[in-house]
Image (cartoon, rainbow, N blue to C red):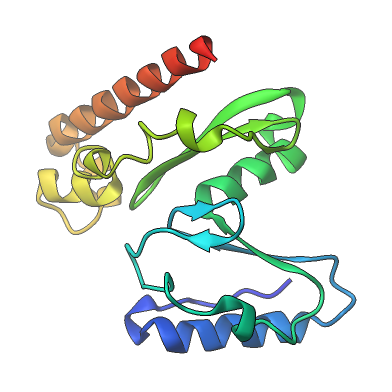
Length: 183
């Protein structure tokens, strides 16, 4: 296992070089390489958004062509959900919705330790960019007029901004839950 500070302000190309270098450093003994991104990623490791840096048009096959073992991109929510299924609170549940509420809001539907085939459709309400303006860490900080969401959460005077974000997130989860029942 290797960890590095991404520092996305350095740019997409520099960050990609770092990720490729870390992947090479793991060597052929690694079982596989999963790269979790704070972006929406289609099942075939196709990066669909550019919220933090833009790799949508980067030829990842070429960038990782000499990397062994196999590598795969996942969204941070998908990686978190699979991790919870295999190692955490999701181990006891065949199916669950993993919600990641951090600087952004995203989710993944997990079934039998894997992303559910229809996960994208079910979690669309939580991956909706509109929710980013109401329930994300960035939205909380903006609404509370603080530097970070953590500052707002620890300041009782900022409770209304935090409560509004929590209500927006709860509504989105309830909507997603209704979609789960329909499936």
